[in-house]
Length: 79
Image 1 (cartoon, rainbow, N blue to C red):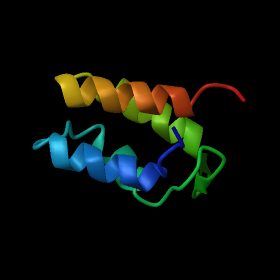
Image 2 (cartoon, helix red, strand yellow; image 1 turned 30 degrees about the vertical axis):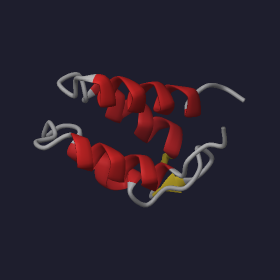
Image 3 (tube, rainbow, N blue to C red; image 1 turned 90 degrees about the vertical axis):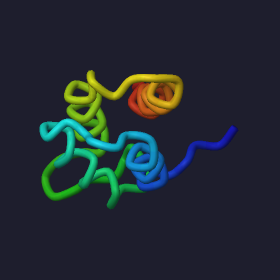
């Protein structure tokens, strides 16, 4: 399976998380502009944005949340 662009994952999150945690929203917004884990948004690396999103997405629960979080964790693994 090929990796989806990060902006597609962000759209998937928005489709499945009706009321995102306010602390996760800035990272979700930034993810909407990213393609690969080697990208950056401003001075922040995509990997750090993903990590901060995951840390603030504890209330994102359910089957879709587990699938999406697993996908983000795989993107964030060291190459």
